[in-house]
Each structure stands twice: as structure tokens, then as C-alpha cells.
Image (tube, rainbow, N blue to C red):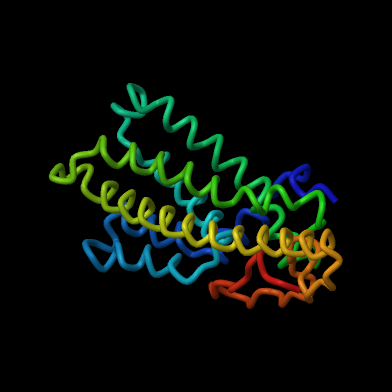
Length: 224
């Protein structure tokens, strides 16, 4: 099944917001309901234990909140193209990785080893794109300006998490591709192959998420 062809319903988006929690924490920071280091830490904590696939979804939803609250003067001026690029990237992330994650966790539809492999292997690059855009948006803000202070803090947290998770995703992908190379090398030399999966490890036995706001620990990179 090509998961990316199916659009996300309002219920799907609500599930993503509920399961990630990061956008809700970010909104509290931007609205001034939570302030300072405590609010920043809450945004960090909501993502730091997530696997890269779920973190990408979290960051994409957070980016939509950032786009909503970015200063009008900058949004209608030099940062307009950057924000449009961010919106397009986030929509693509949610329609591909988000759709795949929802199908796997909520609907019990296993990822297709061939059709969905490229999407999973693209997660590091998707995170790097967000890292670059978050940095650019952050650097145009003045942290000393009370009107921009909370947004600057938010983008700093998102930048840090995107960069951190892109490095983690790289290690996942390196392990997956290395396993495939070892399998190929063993076949070429006639050496009996080790117990290494001959396709990208994908989750086929999944637990459904808990009711409420508990974040699901789940990875599209998990071995069967």
C-alpha cells in the first residue's frame, strides 16, 4: 500500500497532536502560559525521548504553530519564502511519515518493505531540512524584543531537537544499510549469511496507543 496517497483527516491530525504532545507544549510557551526555561524544557522533554520518526512528526506539527505566530512584518517580507518552504516540507512529512506512522500504530497496517523503504530512509534528510529552516527563522528574531522572545526560545528548542534527532536518524539508517551490505557481501562470497534481515526492518507487531495524552514509544526503524 502507498500510505502517502491517503490524506490525513481531522481525526488523524488530532491523534498526531495527542500522541506527540510537543505542539501543545509549544503553544503554551508561545501564548505565555508557561514561561522561561521551564517552558523550553517542557518542549525539549516532549521530544527528547521520541524516536526520529515520531520526532519528525512532532517537529512538523510544531512548525505549523510557529508559522501561525511568526511576526507579520517578517512573514510578509523577507521570511515569506522560507515560511512557505517550511509549510510545504511539513505537509509532505505529515502526508508521508505521519500517514505511515498512523497506519502502523493505529490501524495495524504494516509498512510495505519496498514501497515505504525510501520514505523511512529519507527521515534524516527531512530532519536536516527542518534544522536549517528553524535556524534561519530563529536568527531573524531579536531575543531581547518582548514580542519575539517566546518565539525565539521556541525556535531554539526546535532547532536543537531537529539537529539532535537528525544525527540519531543517521545512525539508524547507517545500521540498516550496513546490514543490507553485509547480507549482499556474504551472498557474493558464498559465505553463509548471518541472521541479518534482507529488507529494511519494519514493525509488524505493534501495540495500539494508550487513551489520553501518553506518547507512544514507536519507531519505523524497529526490527521485526
